[in-house]
Image 1 (cartoon, rainbow, N blue to C red):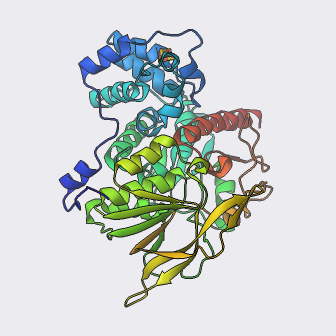
Image 2: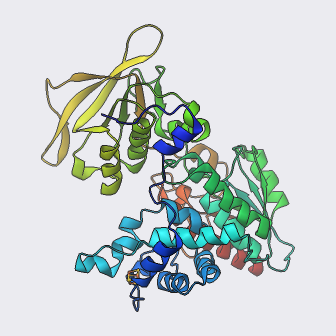
Image 3: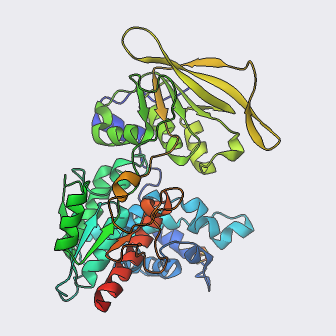
Length: 445
Ligand code: SF4
């Protein structure tokens, strides 16, 4: 049962969603950086998708060269501050730190990265200037991590960049889809402004690109187009009752929470359907919003969940509960109006390698809100309007791995639309690779 009180003010919201990795102070950073062994062929660095030179920036922190440390980070990853906060470091850099082999606490690489990049932004010092103008123009669709990383890298090469963003704010998933105890809106937007002020890419907000005509216009007005469109809204489960009030997709729920914060009301009894990291975020957020009975329901076993163990531990420590081997077969309508009163489940078990229903095991779990965290639809409809674009069987854009060029040579793509939904750091890394691919292609035209 959740022990959080319902937040009714901004201060109470911030208390319930206090940062999981708070900023280090100078003494902590000095001590923590002293522990690094500056390993040759550092495993922490090799596992990072953006290949940040981790031992180097830790050494720079330890010698008091915070600007140098931040530059080392941003040279590799344009979202260095954001990734310091939202990366699953326990399964990436910190998970590979050699200290783990000796059963010692790994270096707190994420918090050190946060410390250095925060110090840089607070200092107001700028590190980057755009390259000499090339006269080439690139349209970037989507101001998420892939789009912003691509835009920054293209500006360093001197190309003019305009980002077209459907929403009112940039940062994609970072602002709209990640639990606020990982990163606040303010922090995500701070890094965005810091980058935009130095590099001068333009962003047109509330400018969704959805039609074939709009795409044609971009193709005619720009030398290349980058697709950083992410993935679509929550997919339908095809369940009876799915259209009832208070049945919502996890992505939409998290976005509403990020925007409304303490002004959003979450009822007492919530069922979250799913076993991935988005399901964990939604369950933990409901508990922190004061819902008293939050149940995570997953159709397979705990071991089969796609979520990281530490994400599951977070929901349990925030007071949510879990039910495994239960599959939703309908959403119940109850009370007055058109609202849900519960989810009808059937128990499941593995038989001969197949997930089977257990006869006679149906039951109804009461709730006032159902959150579906069972996957997002791909934007196949939109993408089919790009001539020559190839999609794989899962409707992901097929790209050349070295350049991120698509089947249509004028289009490049990266991030969730290509990888199907990975971490912010993967999108940041791919966006940069795509920018280099665009640059190479523009230079060869
Ligand atoms: Fe430092 Fe650990 Fe990386 Fe070695 S693996 S360089 S000790 S952070």
